[in-house]
Each structure stands twice: as structure tokens, then as C-alpha cells.
Length: 205
Image 1 (cartoon, rainbow, N blue to C red):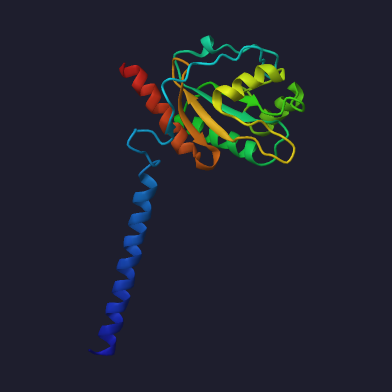
Image 2 (cartoon, rainbow, N blue to C red):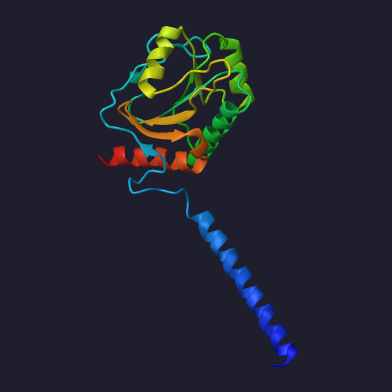
């Protein structure tokens, strides 16, 4: 085979492969979050888990938060501490991205996992730094009230030299835990998808 023809064939093959890879990348980006057989991106939680109110807790502005006031729409519940420098800011930004993707806000709750050090002032500063003021309520309170939340959601609080359990849970319109995300599997797209799915399911029923 003439050398010029061989070179032409090689160049054509390279161009074809490049185009195929580009198409595959675009297709992957447009595919949206990975969704399992449940129809959700996150892990479905047992239906037997009862709703747990936020009794005894108040947000960064001293306002009591009642689960009954949040009924009828999905609620995002996370567990954070105000002086965190890594996992908690990342989680807040993932949640913020999901709200932006949705184009609307849903209630977002951050439950303190470090009651000894979380104060209203520090919680307000955390929300301001994460651009979540007005979009997230940071719940604070006595350890006994917080322990009820840790038990209900299976959370290990922050301890010296031991990082807290980092997860995000979506409650359905009845206040029940429906979908859970370990933070290392959380994406804005997946969270937004599951919030929207719960909204759609409720509207259909």
C-alpha cells in the first residue's frame, strides 16, 4: 500500500476515534444523574422510620422549627458544625447547587453535630460564608435534644479526632426519611433529581 494512502487511513481513523469520544462525552453529560432501579439517585430508606420532630432545637436566629410547618414538600436534612473547614462547606455547596438546579428553594435544615462549639453567631457566619443565608436553617440546642436527631438518623456527632457522620437525607411531604446520600456520593444533580421526583410523586398521588 502506498505510504500516502496509509497515512491518509491513519489520520482518518484518528479523526473518527476523536469524534466518537466527543459524542460519548456529550451523551454522558446529558444523561443526568445515575438512577437505580428505585428511580432515585440516592439510597431509599426503610418506610418504617417514623417522622422525628425538631423539638427543643432552634435555628441560628432563635426561631423554633417544627416538622409540622414543613409538611407538604420535601425537606433536606444535613448534619454539620459551624467551624468545619472541609466536609461541611462542601456539603453546603452541593445542596446550594441542587437548589440552583431546581430553580426553587425547598426547606434545608443543618443539625449541629458539635453543640459545645456551635453558637448562633458562628452558625450565622457559616451560612453567610456558604451563601446559604435565607436558604438553610442551622439548628442548635442542648445535647439531649440533638441526640434524638442523631439516633433517628443514625449519626455519629463530631468528636475530638473523630469526624462526624456526613450524610444528607431528604424527607418526603409527610416528614418521613425517604432518600439518603453519604456525602461522598452526593452531587447537586442527584439531589435535585430526587427532590423533584418526590415532588412529582406527591403531586401524582
